[in-house]
Amino acid sequence: MSNIQQLHDFTTQVRRDILRMVHAVNSGHPGGSLGCAEFLVCLYQELMERKEGFDMNGIGEDIFFLSNGHISPVFYSVLARSGYFPVSELATFRKLNSRLQGHPTTHEGLPGIRMASGSLGQGLSVAIGAAEAKKLNKDNKLVYILTGDGELQEGQNWEAIMYASAKKVDNLIATVDYNGQQIDGSTNDVLSLGNLRAKFEAFDWDVLEIKEGNNIEAILAGMQEAKAKTGKGKPVAVLLYTEMGNGVDFMMHTHAWHGKAPNDAQLESGLAQNPATLGDY
Image 1: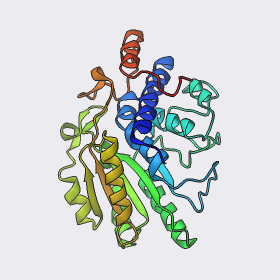
Image 2 (image 1 turned 120 degrees about the horizontal axis):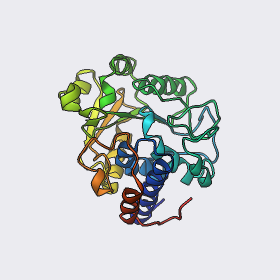
Image 3 (image 1 turned 90 degrees about the horizontal axis):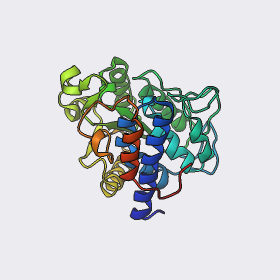
Image 4 (image 1 turned 60 degrees about the horizontal axis):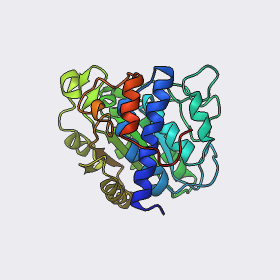
């Protein structure tokens, strides 16, 4: 059990990792990665029931799928610092022959990665399949999935959302990174999602909202509530309101850093706002 300060320190180091990884290769997606740092840290350090080591089937433990795979920097950092692979390997991000590709893939055998998620819109379908497999195996652990809000513009999600409730996939917690931004601008301008809570509820999901999606205490409380809703005949959706670029002042309140790397001066500024806590790779 981590205390809140430890989770804050972990998150600060993850933000440093994200900035350094993307800067080193002048490529990657820092905005959404920074926005989900608190959530993924809480998930892996506090909320999920995980076994030591990594087994692809994840039998007898909670498992997580990242659907919006472009935020791989935050995923890799949290996985490495949670013991799945050496932290030093973060230095290979997006380089030739690296296991840490720009979008996570499975064929290099990187521990912690259970699906390739370069193409948006597919993760929920995979998570539902895994959740149904757990039911067939009489495995009472949970399946977690994170999607982007803009990603919900992909039609396959809605087939999956319809299926999950119809088949009572109630060992599934689907979290939406609700930052209101995507690569071309705000989600409202590109293709409005309308009343997202009402949409999920119309598809017969249990829905809860975490209004402070970058607040560790709020995430822990909200996700514990989500866990308590599982096993009752409905899939559970969490609308996690986050700030893209959170923790780096010049990356916040804009979609501009969805897929752009900081230059040297910007890196220095971002790192100054997030002092090392666990040691850099």
